[in-house]
Image (cartoon, rainbow, N blue to C red; front, top):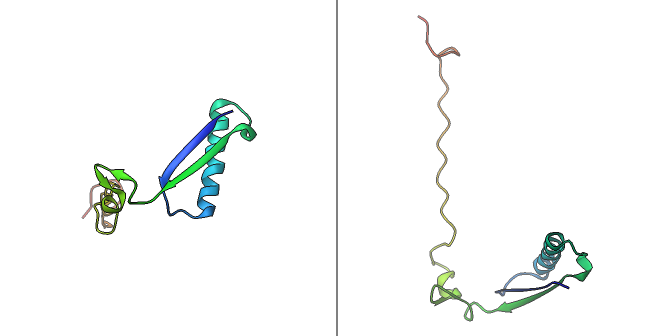
Length: 93
């Protein structure tokens, strides 16, 4: 019987944790070709002061004002401006 342990920083709702259990269970059952009823999932929560990232507590690394771990999205270029030229490229006079 597969047993999955998830350790994460506390703060998720019960609904989020229930969804995590369901989705992890389904993924493990599918990957291992075993009935989902045989999969066990345990969630362990730690406080932001007890979790370290890059040598500093999570609360410091990911707290307010901390640099984001997510890459910044590059701005999308603006669409081209409408043209008065006819389709096909060359303007006629």
